[in-house]
Image 1 (cartoon, helix red, strand yellow):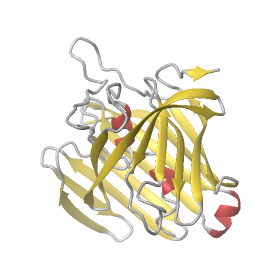
Image 2 (tube, rainbow, N blue to C red):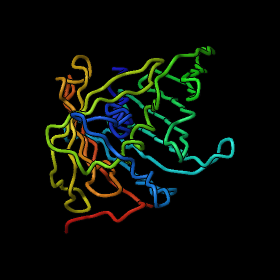
Image 3 (cartoon, helix red, strand yellow):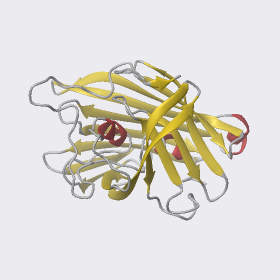
Image 4 (tube, rainbow, N blue to C red):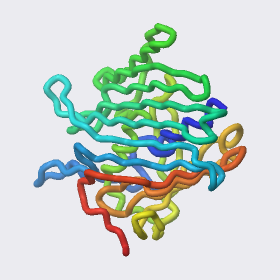
Length: 276
């Protein structure tokens, strides 16, 4: 069970998507935050707040997740401080109580994380760790506050963490994607670099509580077994606009299914294109 409910944040934070959107069938992506003749433009901004409603097997209220964007500085560099929270509710919390706290700190200029916090309690399975990234040395220092250990690990260039990966991806120009394109992704998690493959399925119109929204549909390749029913059990829709916010996530689990719907939002950096 310990690996099932991390989906509260895993799904919302695109942990299955990871980072480093560099290639798709030989194509390159261009970050929307880096252009030659214009100032930095981000897909998100300080004050953005998203709330997602989780449901299990389409009828049980499983809980809520929120993501919030703040601003900070580190070594006189401007940075984003992003917070991801997850909490089980209702009947689910009676037999599997979850409280998740994920935080990432990433520089605005490079969109690279320099600090990551993961403090979780998922049905008695707990983690309390902090990761400090040194991109000049390609090294990650993992501080395990639960076991009081400190370990250093080599990392590759432009590595992302569990939460920063979503915001890095959101800030990429995805307009040239075509159905069938595959993206290879990687991320530092659990003291190692993990690789993922992501399939772009095309564009769809998704029905949300706010109205119909044009969306980009992705299917990450996940590990079948204890958590997911099949290798392609996870599907994610993000808004096909400048915000690129998650709208809907569906997962077929080994037992039952999990769904996450955008429930509330505020502080978006760009217009939310709702089709009334």
